Picture 1: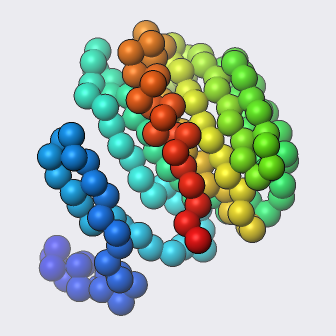
Picture 2: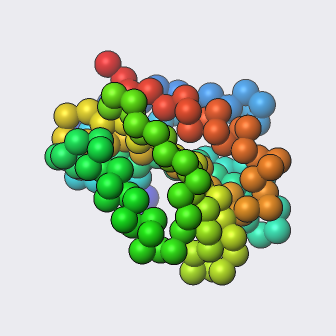
Length: 152
């Protein structure tokens, strides 16, 4: 079954670049594919504490409007979820925003995100940690999220 699925995927798979994790001791080839729809393309985790692993995820979202309009939609979503905006900034086609609050789990969370707009897409990198994890994980998570760059 797995081999069949792998063989069906070959026509669109051209072998992506290798992602390197030298401190963890490995590299792995990326699943680098082009897609017309929105999708989550990457998730990375720090070691878990208290049952939660601080993480960074990258999503590619179809969005036709401006980065300012994207931020307005994001601001409304954050407000609907009852989260508090800590800060936000838009510079050119790049937006940074930070917010916190409790989601469905009831645990206080902290989020930091960078969104970059190009043509009809927004590339969104988001860091997530429990609020009490943030002081120890923020430097790693922010550095990772801030490093988001668009290829070519």
